[in-house]
Length: 114
Image (tube, rainbow, N blue to C red; front, side):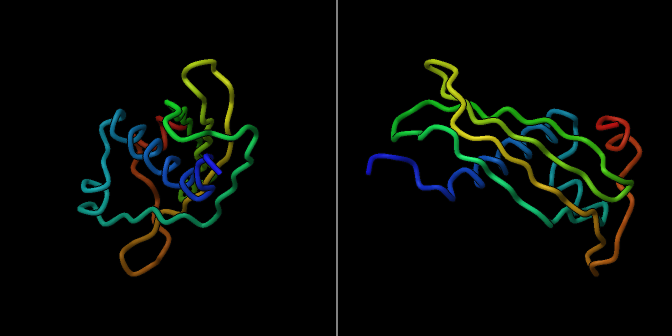
């Protein structure tokens, strides 16, 4: 069909989220070393215009705190050539310990997304 497979958008959401956290000085390795896991508990994507193979895409990502242990990341995937929005969506994450118990996010992360 020449269009991007729908599930790839969720992979791009993850890339955007990882890059945003890294830009704030917090990567997944540091998070896991601190005993925090950030699983996705909800994912939503609205496809607005098809992205095609070889389109250059930009993932714009913002985050916000929903509670001391839950975060939401919002994503917009834009075609670089004409700034057409291909998709928008969000993921919600719960901070938990490796045993699966809720855990507060570190102060610097809560402050960055307040």
